[in-house]
Length: 183
Ligand code: NI
Image (cartoon, rainbow, N blue to C red; front, side, top):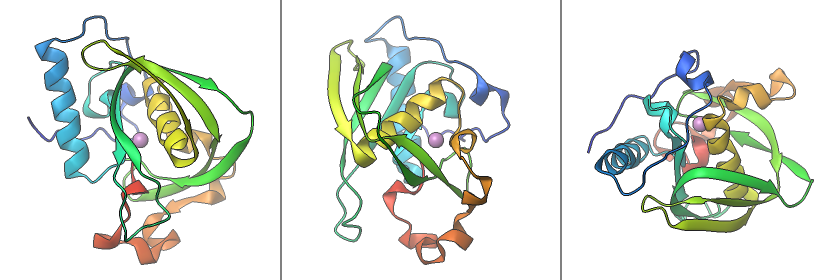
């Protein structure tokens, strides 16, 4: 159990395509996931991908609890998702502001598919197969991008929609930052 320093944009490992997990229910995999959970919790993130803590494997975690202070933030079930596959269920996309623990202090406007199906495995190798929409679908697309070496700034259509969150959203800085702030 440990909080690991996250790699920041510019680190070459974040640009790599991560390898699939081949063995489930192993101490090594459990230790990785525990480190990811500890790190995401410590940084108040909505999601984290293994490459962000320096492990180039196809493992992501995500989850957001409902918070009465931020009724506009949709709850997302806490999930450990291994070897994920995304299927687009609706060609429609919508823009939304994203942040990332590997791009601290910044926000950017990114288009994502509104409705997806995602499949993969839990740490014991059991199948996960869900449909998701809205913020839930956005978080999954953001995290799976990490496994393909893509950070959200690469998906910003107009770089004028990229900036410091303290400037773009001064009301959200410091302790009042909502849970969707960083993935
Ligand atoms: Ni991220």
